[in-house]
Length: 210
Image 1 (cartoon, rainbow, N blue to C red):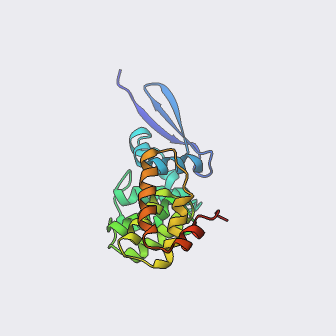
Image 2: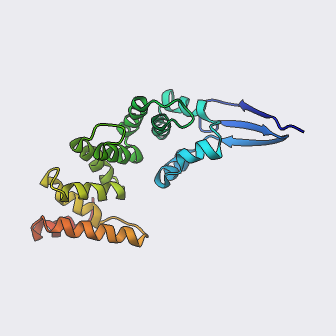
Image 3: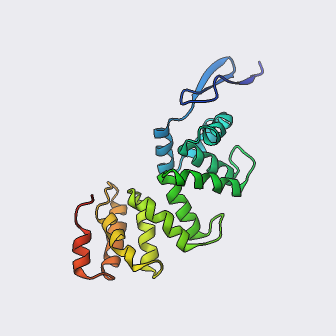
């Protein structure tokens, strides 16, 4: 018997949106992702694989609606990343970056870190270290360790402002992670930054975060 595939959108808006998938007589439901789920996926860089491979691009209409109409930052970033890399949509790098920027403007850490990384590396955009620092500094202040490490690397390389040394050191000093390799990376950057600051500034940077 030949299998058949039907996709029915039950609802379009709101966190309870579901897509019903009927294949071979078995009905499965794909729930619209929660903000917490998306943040976790962003942290583990599994979001693009999830929407394309696991969920077979079934939520594309919902994702676009949540990004464009509901203006949820998690969905703006997801939609932007999908557009930028041509995942489930026709590739549109400029529009993808625009939606990432919208998410960053709402303070989404994943968007801030990724835009900072892209501008630092020149990925999809023209390399712009000053602009990268703006995004990375904000993400670093919100506790994003990859942004803290990258910002430190930029400062140690002699780019950016010495006024950022103290905060860069401070954020790394108070970073929390269970990963030993990340601990070592943090210690390395702290040591490099410490060589660029007076001892009194280093001690002050170790004071508790507000």
